[in-house]
Amino acid sequence: MFDRDPAGVRIELRGLTKHYPGQPAPAVDNVNLDIPAGELVVFVGPSGCGKTTTMKMINRLVEPTSGEIRIGGEDVLNLHPDELRRHIGYAIQQVGLFPHLTVGENVALVPKLLGWPAAKVADRVEELLSLVNLEPGAYHDRYPRQLSGGQQQRVGVARALAADPPVMLMDEPFGATDPITREHLQSEFAKLQKKLRKTIIFVTHDFEEAITLGDRIAVLRERSHIAQYDTPANILAAPADDYVAGFIGQDATLKRLALLTVDDVPAVGPVPSSNGLPRVDAGTSLREALDTMVAHGSDRCATPSGVLTYTALCEAVGTDGAKTGHEEVAAGDR
Image (cartoon, rainbow, N blue to C red):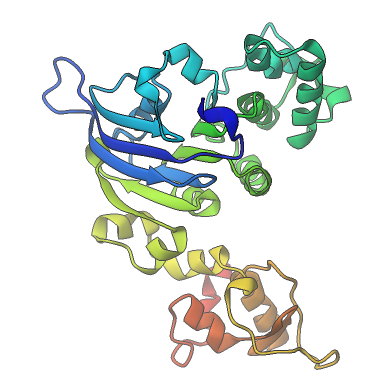
């Protein structure tokens, strides 16, 4: 089966359609999409556009009317739905933890269904709780009602990862949390995905969340018609039409500053050890680098690979540095 490679497998959707009986138009109409192995692809679009229905057809919680779904080259419509779902992680906004089971028992559900030895299950539960920053000794025997909303979401992610599936489906998994907790969970999950490299389809209506997490974003119209499918940076730089531009909003430059890092921009180097320039670390966002320049009244800063200039920073986000002052580009921070 396709789960022989837990690091992630390719997903192909061909002509995928869902037409509910009695409805004049299909809920999902002829979706064609290629999702590379090991990437997190975000489906973003307004409520009712079909993004959740499209995702649910992949693990056959919703059966397609027509079309083809291949995971790791295998036609999943030839598999028994229950067997298929045991090999795909699934996390949703409502979390869906069983209230009568402890945290450890919730995480252990799928490995037990797959017949794992008890010792292997116990080790996996402990490993995953540590992975999502829930100390096993403190949380293993607690019940869901004893956890905060953010902690419950982490348990939901751990349970989705329990059998080490190559594919994960996530439907607004952080949507029920407050903004601060949500941002923290997004950051933690992004770091986790860098380690695991699962193939993940992540549904959201929040474009900010999409650009924070996605390797690629599929912007969906009504009936899951794809308005644009590309990397966050490319969508921000060149939205396909006014519909996509509407999702981005008025602050595309600020979003690109937050998305790109100093590692993405060619630097002039090497950096002298004592050049008096403000310094930033590798991985620092361009927005943070710009803040550092402004705070020090400088038009450049030192990075581990050289000197980042204000002009190069502006070119990277598609802003004319010769015409735009520091204050204008940084105005979104005020």
